[in-house]
Image 1 (cartoon, rainbow, N blue to C red):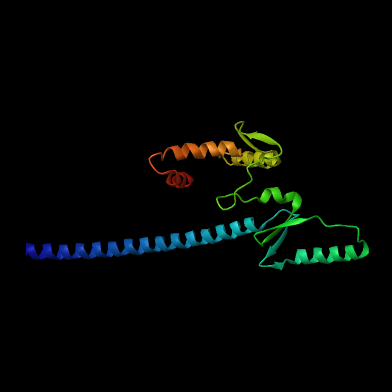
Image 2 (cartoon, rainbow, N blue to C red):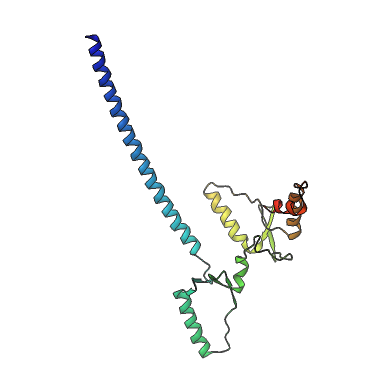
Length: 198
């Protein structure tokens, strides 16, 4: 008799545990699905914000996408053609094409210089005037106000920005490279240069 009651209680308890496990599983699966949905929504929003940010350009810059002029550029070109027909002496400001996507007015071109291993900058390059970021690193004076605004906005959001590098003269960058290369003195000169370049 006692064994039968024990078995009944055991089976009842087992069913209760099974039900609880099912409920917990359903709960966790539901929460996981909800979190996945939120993550995907957040990623989509972030991507659309980033796309908006990356497609915004200074007001004087004309954007050419896929070799097709935007409506604004077409209107501007039509207006320029009409103006040139009436006054041949007026000249448009020269512009530079960067990577076939942007047409940048010459006076703004300094903002769009790509520098990397494949696009080295001239050894004599230097900003015309500099200021000190956080009182430490030299940067182009033309970005002073924007830099200050960025640091101030970050501070309002409770974020403290710290500059860790800015403009470097060619000679200083060469010293840094040579110092890194010296760490691989056990290798050939070419191999040490390759490692240092990483």
